[in-house]
Each structure stands twice: as structure tokens, then as C-alpha cells.
Image (cartoon, rainbow, N blue to C red):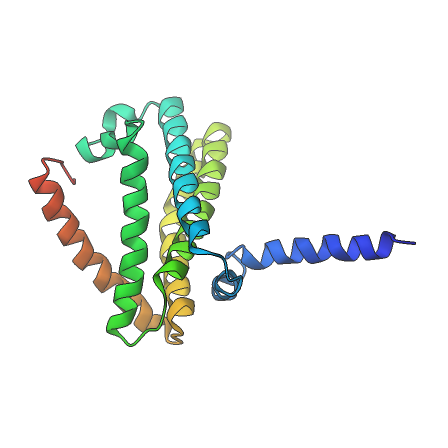
Length: 202
């Protein structure tokens, strides 16, 4: 007699998980994540976990396919057990800060703690894509290369959609232009900082 109710709960949970997976409707997923009302500590914990997970997948992929020798000084820094996760976490933080500041320039109203949650979730989704890419490389190398290329527009699409949902923007083309402009400004700043730190950004 309790089976229908139990099934309803299972389907509700499955639907909830599907909603926050952004491949179907990224803006709806972003609004759902923001609407959860999670504490700021969740964002910081997610930042730590996803930084380690991302580097773990990257290291396994490089070791499996012999790409570690091709890393520049900045990329090789990711192999360090301490500085690697800190470097990755710094990239995620910088992306979240850029999302907030870039939105403020155009009258956005997003909060940093929400931006951090969204960027952490975006990074987690991309890590799942990287795992799929790894399997594809094992099965058929060209398929893995295709997934690698598709991950770039996927990242940009999710970032634009999440930024729009964070700040309440509706014009995705304008958000895309803002994201690209912010990216280049931040890239120049990071390149200058890396130059003075003695790292090769190329």
C-alpha cells in the first residue's frame, strides 16, 4: 500500500536531480541552485572538493596518455599536491568574482556566495564531462578529441546562462559579450601577475 507513495518520492528526487543538471535548461538549473538557500559554507566546501576532483581526473588522464611532459610551467604547477589544488581553487574563485563584478558593471544584482555555488557546480559538470572524455579516449581516440572540443562551447554556454540567471539578465547575447570582455580583461591581468611570478602563461 505504501509503494505508490515511495515511488512518487523516488521520482520527485530524480526530477530534482535532473533539474539542477544544467544540460537541459541551464538557467532553470542555476535558479534552482540559488533558490535552495544553501549556506556559504557549502560553497567553500564544494570549492575544496571539486578542486581536488578536477585535478585528480586531469592527473589520471595525463598519466594514462603521457601528456605530463607537455605542460608549461603554469600547467606543471597543477601537479603539485599542495599548490595544484590551491591553483585550481584560485581559478574557480576568480571566475566567480569575475561573474559577480562583471554583472555589477551592467546593473546586475547577483551575490558572490551564489556565484561561487554556480561556478563550483559548473566545474563539477565539466569534470563529469572530462570523465566521459577519458572513457571515450580509451574506447576511440577521435571521439575523445571531439568531446574535448565540445567542452569549450559547453563551458561558455553554461557560464553565460549561469551569469544571466545570477543577475536576472534576459539578453544572452549581451551577457556573452560581457563575459568575453571580462574574460579578456581578467586574462591580461592574470598574465601580468604570472609574468612577475616567473610562470609561463603560454
